Length: 412
Image (cartoon, rainbow, N blue to C red; front, side):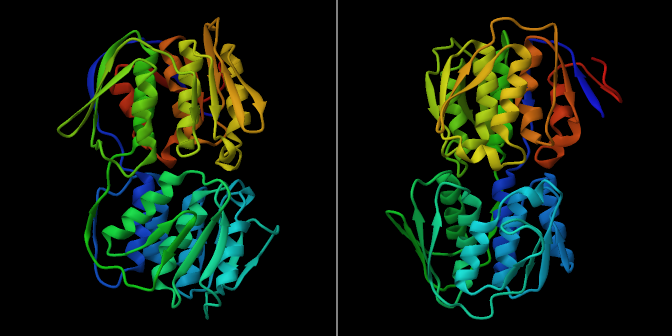
């Protein structure tokens, strides 16, 4: 097992961070591009492994779409393959094949798609054999499980002969990701109507256009956290927009309570330290990818904070609730379950001399716990897991002045 050692540092000179491009925007733009008749110009696509996997599969078009560990790629391409009447096997890593996809498959089948499970019912791998005839335009999908199922259906809707009338049942989670999908579609010429819990899209064609991907707000969140946990310093984060399609831009408001002042300037946003006013609670329903980062920050800063909206965290790259509970305990903090819908961060009161973080094959676990380096010497297991979304992460951490060394075995 490879380990990355980070030596404690809690003061940072101003440094400019060239953030990665948004994986969420890139993956949606690539699917829309594949569905467009004509040539789009896409720029600033993400270098993340998930996006590069999407590009490779769309360009080479193999008989088997192996998405590796990319959940977004699995869900988006399953709908894409069905809508374009292709015959494909959809598969991935063992963890990917343990992540549910039944809600999306049921929705596609109700539209008329022929899809068969090749293993366990409700999970990849799948055999997709196209959508020879649309049976209905009206379908229902639970709104509280994964917005990626909803986005996958929405992006293929304009190409379907009957269009789509999609009813979202119950509470809608990650609404900002659905809004991102629809806004991207409008930039490629698509009109839609969203009233209450129903989204209607009539048959129409995507129009070729130029689209430039914004920098990634999820990636930005780790720098907000690092500075919040530090004693002093400032960062400039490149390529971020004040008016963003990304729901994770909520990190600006969250971190304003945790000691970070954000000032938008030409080319990005400047972060400065200020007084911590305190974060009593936050609902992560529409920004679940920020939960790990904020939990670690609150635990370090002594914030006893109530977290809600974490329902989707158990079906991500790992069970992120369990992973957070295990790793927070290593520096005497806690994510305590209050109810099925709420958790309390109990902050650390004593910090060990060194901490080793297990990453659970989850890129966000590695990056979310990085700010611990402001309080103790840190060991990160399997550091290359960040390649899924942020390949340059550790290089940029080093540029910020944090000394690091890669070791081949367990030192603790």
